[in-house]
Image (cartoon, rainbow, N blue to C red):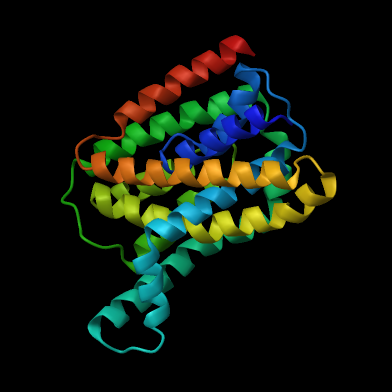
Length: 262
């Protein structure tokens, strides 16, 4: 794999991981649209997730530190952070279990362009419906434990390439009554355990396959990290001003383009 291909894939991964448009689907689509090679595709894609994992760890560093600190503190902030940690853990369980049991089969069977395009369209519909339903109710300030379970179940659907993880979890949060910013923050925080699991699991297979050199892996990680940090910052800046519908329209367009080219 060339350096230019690594840079392209790192940019695509970083920019689309946190936007509700599916990074896994875009990594498949970009190979089709500009004829990139697909050597060890699953392992390379999952490794690039390490960059976005670093992005979410860095951006929310004060929140993560607060959770660590809450273990030895019993003030009001400590209680809030322990509760948040428990909710994030609860939300992670469904996708972690299903991913551990079936991720290889899912990733292998659903990486073809037509399946990814169908997943793009399904994500678009869910984004529009969830945004409409959320507009019919008053937004709440924080997720409950039941909300965490429901958002976690939505994350299971995003194991399919082309189904956006952030899109599903933000949509589920909006459906449960969370405000746009609250749903987005919860979605980004709960991404860390899943991204870490997928990335570290694939790292050994990537190293054994030799699809990327150490220099290429470092470059891909850096590009993905910078792009991911930018995507988090930008989405949180605009999320309260725009609905999810522009992302749905984009997904319909890219799905049509992918079907046309393939």
